[in-house]
Image 1: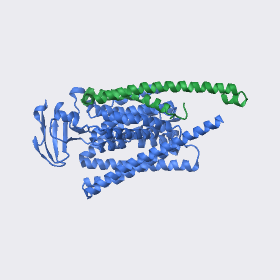
Image 2: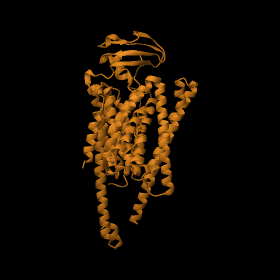
Image 3: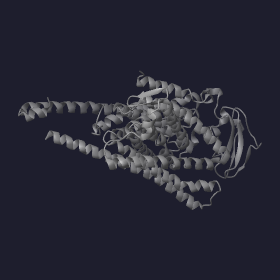
Image 4: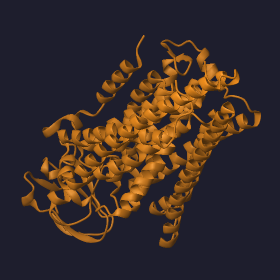
Length: 455
Length: 102
């Protein structure tokens, strides 16, 4: 029999082996080398000082200095290590964004990183605390809230994603360990899902690149939003309906019919998941991991499909599913951190501030699961999923406008984007309230029971 | 046998003694947790202060790419290994505890 630790180590080794070779290659394998679209974000002059670069570079269109207009595109060929200049590189969309003129080496190191004020610091700590609380409770990474929050205080989009991912794996590690102590984590299931999720991430990135090539950034944003809406609406509704049925009928959670049907199919290798108390074919677990990874590379919240997948396809309880989701989250977070670390885009200060809050939050969230009934996890998860879906529906017209398929005024776009952000914040607030309320109720009940025993 | 059983049986002295022992044990436990919170909290603060007073240097190392990518990963791991237990013991001291244990 494999011990959980062996499964965990195996999963990490297999996961790491799937990092693209060019990323691991060190000095000779600069991931920036190649042809990229160069996209300016505002109307200004920019130039790249050749002497400061030890290798050489060429613009494909032959121009080295010119006035750039908004969204003007260039092709830049980068041939050297230092020629990468650390212009912000979006691997998902295959673009390099030049945002200012000046010393490229300085730009590389620091211009992406904001100056931290006391207000920013407190804001990030609180965001980490609330995000960690929700994550520890429902087992889903909350990058979908961290990234917009960080961008709202001026952090570059890619730096926000990279810094988030870097805090994800230690937070998930602490959360998973905490819930493992409560006997809620199925490490074997988590390890299988984590490894198959890596394949999903790789395929998801490919699809993102393909979409970006055809429809550009606005097309990518529209695709991401549509994916958000479709996935969250379908799974959010299923989860909410299930929670409603349990609340109405009372009693414990029942194993989903689909899961029971799949458990009866004898397709080797059959695997027994001890903590989950389930015996199911390996081939029915892999698609869940794959879909989780695929969705992670698309909307940065693969757990929205992974957790319901474990509940409705594998047949685990929602407590075990949400706890096991943290193992998958850890695996993907570690791989993501290595990827972004190799590109030098992690702002360690932001990572550490968010981590300071989320390590508190994740432990409170994990503790809260011991006080509430199983259906509460479904209720909280379903509520968050549906509100986040609404937030994405609100922002879809702005992407249609960017694609030229709809005409909107600047004021309307601003209003829609703000409303979308407020809706995401509302989702977190609702989740936090439900968790705290459930926990307080449980603690009160425990205290009353204790007092009764004393009397 | 529990203190409550002795109390029900009318042996109030034994029950009180047992309750007192439990109280002492709880106090000792709280003291140990308090020391752990102080110690881990101090280390946490030192680590955070070290990063933020040398943020230029550390940010520089963390953004060089290639094998330097290990820096941010090691830093977050080390800090979470100290800060994680600190949060755990702090919550424990505040009385926020899980309902059941395995």
